[in-house]
Image (cartoon, rainbow, N blue to C red; front, side, top):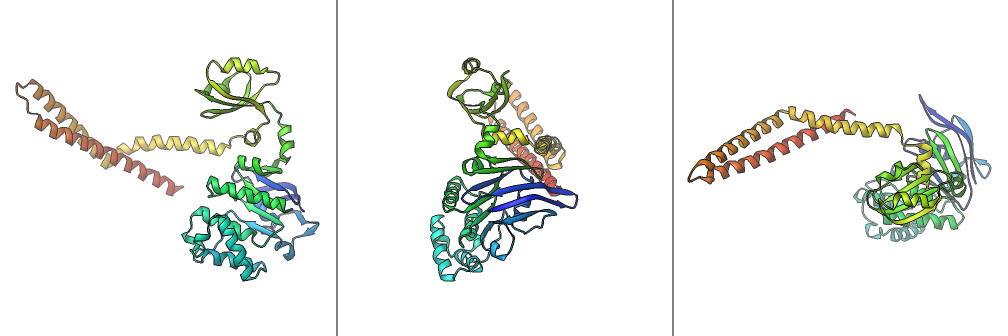
Length: 388
């Protein structure tokens, strides 16, 4: 149905896509996956002829892009493009009429889809009054209402809660059963794994992995061990027979060295954790993604910078005038309270009233100090964000 060959696109000094080729068939779901900034959206825009490639071709059933083909495609952009001041149903009807559907038919179909997504009660609401998730559902309806043959969706699950993600995925399967082709981009590997017949993994503008989900998993072997357990599993990734490990709170996915017997693994782990599940399976798409792409260095740098930033904020917040003033007040209150306590303990008839007054003043000074310190740290964080 759709075939792209040797696509290349460069923006100024940034090479967004380099030599990307892919093919999508009718009655299939194609997952375009990769980290943020990998080039997924650029490829989608070239497929839709929104962006002209520097090199390469895109054909639909052997034909180059034209207005007839354009009307056979439904496109959901990553950025929402609805008219915020217009009513929900009016917006859906308007976009449908642009595709040649009569207003009466568009209204009937639109209401049916609103009911499917539990949005019928918002039919007359303005788009701007809807939540981000409901706006995403509304935009999806405008994408498919004209019954396109090819549906291209850029990050379709953005803003959707788990329940509505399931509804959306069910619609994907229905479209597939109707013989339509669905292309969707995502960085959510679990969604891509559950939905895709074919995948294309893009990293830094290059296609680094492609093919059917089954063939991709077979390529990476079947020595992936899934564990569910109770206890502290941090040691799992450092076991001598573990090539790579992703360890979470009560779940781990380990890539095991070849030739290791399951009993050897069980002996090493059962004395330290209580196993609920022990299963050798095909590697998950998430583990394949991390194996191929790795953890982007910019994410590591951002995390390190964020940690360092917190430490700096805590350090330099003590130099803030209001924080210093609150700290001095707290120290004085503590000193006076402690002195009065010692003096009263030596009296045969101590007066605890004055001690109680200064103890309350100390507590108040403590709260004021904490408040001013947090305000100073927030102010510094805000300034850093504005600077960025």
